Figure 1 (cartoon, rainbow, N blue to C red):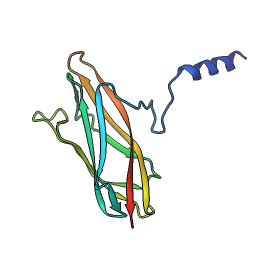
Figure 2 (figure 1 turned 90 degrees about the horizontal axis):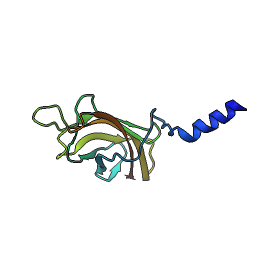
Figure 3 (figure 1 turned 135 degrees about the vertical axis):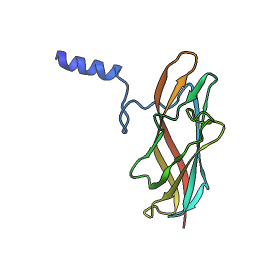
Figure 4 (figure 1 turned 90 degrees about the vertical axis):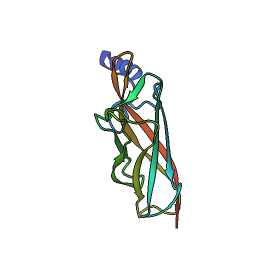
Length: 149
């Protein structure tokens, strides 16, 4: 009985865990996120680009190392091509957030024409200049692309 009560109490207190491991927070209070696909309508097998915008608040920056990572659900029908193109500042320590991060992709041949929802996770590290701390953030990605014949 005591063990059951402890398990129930812990399940109410502990945060939920996402599929990729770790806690998934929908928003970062220090960094604004946006993602778009260019083009937004695409034929199967044709290459497109994901444009990812990360805009930190004043006094925060996104670091190059450890490297950013993009992962997609295996069933969503997207194949990443190469590594993301991450613009860097002149000192090469930070992401140049005035430009988008670009990730090339192709749609899987298994996708049928119509709307396809792409889901995944963008993992990056950001730091506070004033307080001297850094943190890892797992940004959920969800994007709809129109698959053409």
